[in-house]
Image (cartoon, rainbow, N blue to C red; front, side, top):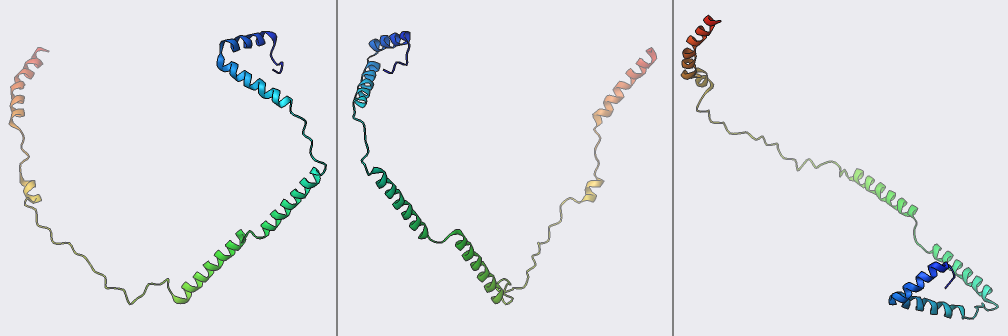
Length: 156
């Protein structure tokens, strides 16, 4: 189409187009569109096109300028209104003493007490007086092994 391919690449593409019907249809539609585009007459603007275009641009610029004048309050206006509301609120609170709780509604403090706990069934004195209980079997095993220790001591 635009002579961008070498002869070997062009022959490869033509071979592919003969084998692939989808690519062949696509190539045909592109070639037809380019043929139509190349045969269109040249477009020439009218004689007063530039003057009309400049007048339209000036009109749009003036319309934007007028619209910017009627946009509404700015961010500074909102900040000033917020500061005024805070100041009015501060003066209202300080004038009516709303920051201090009312003393007439204060109730007497209530002290909560826990009920007496029941004494434990086993006291620490009882536990201290009980025997820890040494098992008898360990003493019996030690007594059985004593003669072996004496025998080993004599042999050495």
